[in-house]
Amino acid sequence: MRTNRTVVPLLVLPLTLAVLVGCAAASPPETTAHDAGAAWAYEGEGAPEHWGDLVGEYRACASGEQQSPIDLPEPRGGAALDLVGSGPVRGITADNGHTVQFTADDGATTAIAGADLDLVQVHFHAGSEHTTAGEASAAEFHFVHVDERGALTVVGVLAERGAHNPAFDDLVAGATAGAGRASTVDVEAMLPAERSFATYQGSLTTPPCTEGVRWIVLERAVELGADQVADLEAAHIGNARPVQPLGDRTVRHAL
Image 1: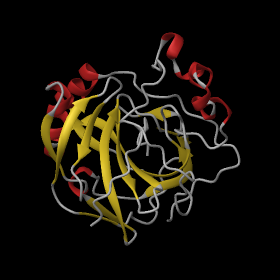
Image 2: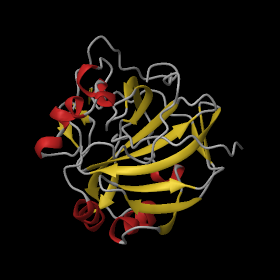
Image 3: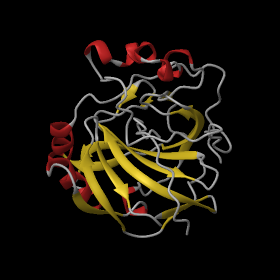
């Protein structure tokens, strides 16, 4: 396991959450959980439609051609995502002002298509950032990973109201507990049983909107209890960037 951790910006994302392999920028972004250098937000003068004008570093938010999130096609039930989690992962859950984020301890890994990736963090959006055939879900979770080259892969998991989901209890509890709560997540346990997916090349979904992010969004949503969704919404609601043009990109169903 690698212990040198690349710190990446919040992917609001999400998420979200590539074509064949994620290709990171030449120099991976070295910032805190989110870029606080300008007053970006989800409404008002700092809303998504203004991000590209706030500071020069955010220009990609307005001019980028591979931005995220996007509207995904109807589920087609193709190949299942080959993902193997390392089991329960410990870390700290805290509110960073834009979402509630679980930051994994060093050494946490997830194997995706046979490649070991470092799990960096998990966060949520309420409602979802990615939509499916124009429809948003109640929430979306982004599992942010980085490889040894600094390339980012984000696994996006959509969530709908339904049965209580104990796999999310610890993370949801962090959303209501304030800053600095010790938490545990189990990536595999938090995925739906059916793991068909869509993948495309995209970007961070918050400033600086850096491109070169591999997105893997599972087609089937998990269920969360109404109380769990309410707790997420009480912490942050409407923290979702609107969908961006697909342009000449292709949404695929294989890695």
